[in-house]
Image 1 (cartoon, one colour):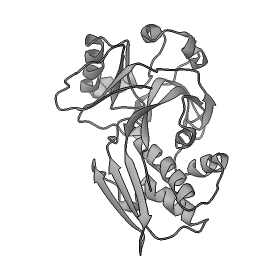
Image 2: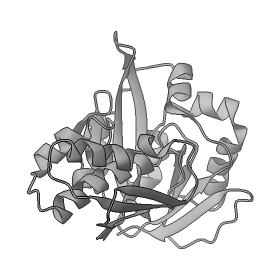
Image 3: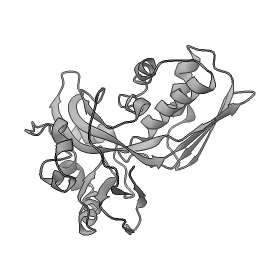
Length: 267
């Protein structure tokens, strides 16, 4: 059985405040996009894990796919499996690839093993793997708040837009990004984003990580500027970087030297 965990982009990312526990309160809109990894499971004599595509620095036991497997197999009757992960979503990009892998793996095991776990319970379980993992259970546009763990449906639709994602050859760790960002209050609520035309988003929609990340990694800002030079209606860094996306009304064939580039139509 196989599934295709997809990436997400952040439409705005406001850092509201720093909490007493050291975490930050945020607000963002997560939007699913069709850049996908692949996860396959088949019955085996002994559980194994094979990863191809983009190489990851983490040990197999630290991979979020295997953390989801360990979590479910510790609570339910999960047979021995050969597990295959093909990474097409780059890591350290702000695209949520690892979190998506974890959520899709949990749903895959639920279906393969006929565990009949509800989506509500899957969301609760996968939240222990990563704060944003539950988003990928429903996998529809959502306003995200709290520490990235509270999700409400969003009416934002980008259907018919052409999406370009460019990731330069640098990676930004979430820990590093949060150590540099400065919280500030915004007068704009993301709950009203759907009522604003996309070509007006650049006037109201900001990723608060951009100033500090762009200062340290100018190549990321260069990618954003190029998106606009190509005619993007809106462009921004996603998450804490390092990937940048542009939304276009027409198909483009951009060239970003030395960057990972993905393009596709949003449905």
